[in-house]
Amino acid sequence: MNEEQLNQEQIEELNNLASLPKEEQQAELQKFLKKLSPEQIEFLKKQQGNGCIFCSITEGKIPSNVIYEDNHVIAVLDINPASRGHTLVIPKKHYAVTALMPDKEAEHLFNIANKISKALFDNLKSEGTNIFVANGVIAGQNVAHAVVHVIPRYKDDGLNFFWAGKKANDKDMGDIKKLLAGKIKIEEEKKIHKIEKKKIDYPEEERIA
Image 1 (cartoon, one colour):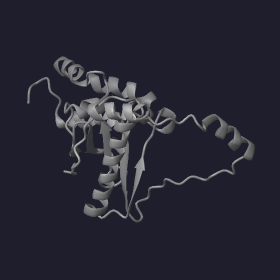
Image 2 (spheres, rainbow, N blue to C red; image 1 turned 30 degrees about the horizontal axis):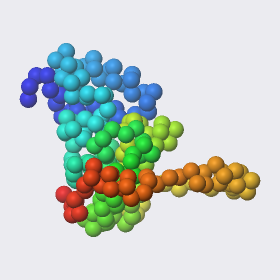
Image 3 (tube, rainbow, N blue to C red; image 1 turned 180 degrees about the vertical axis):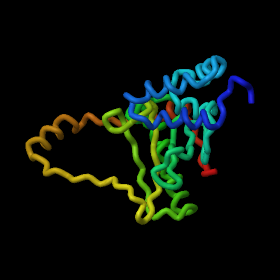
Image 4 (tube, one colour; image 1 turned 135 degrees about the horizontal axis):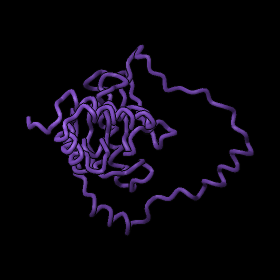
């Protein structure tokens, strides 16, 4: 290993920063940087590019446990898993949230997430899966790069994704319907679909590694 490169322990510590609340990340990053040599800091700047950890993972600059990869997405095991086999499905293009992704790319992202869900059932014998997306800090997103979590579920795993529903107000539901109905547009017509198909030509047979 070159003197400027990070060792495995330092890489893991850097990755762990991504799971911290945003307000804590900067302080912890400063502590982390103080432990590095000037050569390592310079190396890190080059490797991090735009500062997005997920971009560095998709570009192979940060080692990760890859279970699937194609030209458009990469799926890696989460280093702080909610359960055994917790997988992150990450688009290689940088989008802050999934809502900004073109339909075709989002379709492919969730298609791969679904295939990984099947692999977890078949190979890890999970009894269920949660396919989870956090869009925005208020929703629990820690890194401003779209990602789909595929979380295997096992009996007595201690995870809880349930919430107490509140009785909806009829007037409020009517107002929301007026604000949203007709506003959800699928990317237009056959003409645009053909253009997108040329840009993104996904192979028909894609397998989980």
